[in-house]
Image 1 (spheres, rainbow, N blue to C red):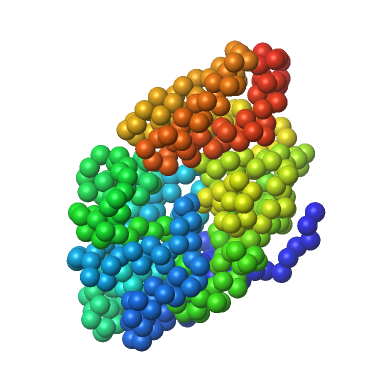
Image 2 (tube, one colour; image 1 turned 120 degrees about the vertical axis):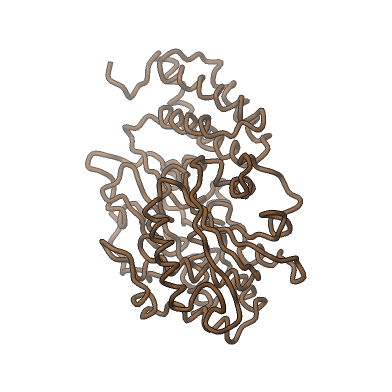
Length: 429
């Protein structure tokens, strides 16, 4: 067992309460809206963008693209109006950090959106939120009105002449709406099919106007960066390649599932054994999905890996959303993969052939293997179909392929055992 560590600095969860949200007064007492006042009074939009870039803030929604670079792709002479979209769709299985963050400290997101809008020159911010998060949607609507009455949102914010407001848009409730271009189509009332750039959304997004899309956790990092500086943010990480903190949501075979704000680069073993309380009694760590359903199974050999974007990339994995789904030695990973593929097959928008046809085909092969009707030739067939998914139109199908590919990479013997025995070896006869 890893010894308990001293509490790490809490940045995004600084005002987190066990049973209620932080009020505007509590947020301001912790330094809230100081960054916004500083930016509007003493900084230019270019300076704000520069600080975000220097802080090495990478997108926390899964893609890990540089937030500062994305903002800088909005040209200074780009047309107006410009829009900012906050992606609170969060329909990746196993991921629930954005909901917890909104329920903990909504003004952190509101200030982060306003600062990002100032850096971009946007006049309107839209929170695109899944319908199951009705409580979070109401919190944001209520607290946005609180911010307006305090002069922190709306027209002439803090007497600066800068106008920006936020509306909350409830999604129709499909996983594909979390993909950036599909989300823009959904907001415009179109079928939420993805589209490939160019042009990029920062050139032509909502209604062909410049649009920046960012994740909830990413936007929540902006105010602390502007308040404390890029070097402070980078120094929060435990690795040189990381920056800031990360909210890890841990679920599965652990004693204390939940959301934990920890430094970027914290070892996987520490997350599980210390912060999540260790494995359940009688359970042994077998594997985990490190960043939600669209990442690869990581077996025991990666148990000590630093959890940051670069460390996982070099190991052939992705941090994704930081949603760690833990499986023990009694879990059938064929059944787990079948469960994930069933979800992806249902949620496909059906736009392109590899995704529309490939996922149901893979689901059928896995179902037959799990039910004891598998044949040896199913394994090379699954490998070929996994390769075809990478030829899809957007990142949806490659993400769906990740658990399948890693199942066949690390746990092929488990698949073969299903076929050889004619049943799932984890089930009682």
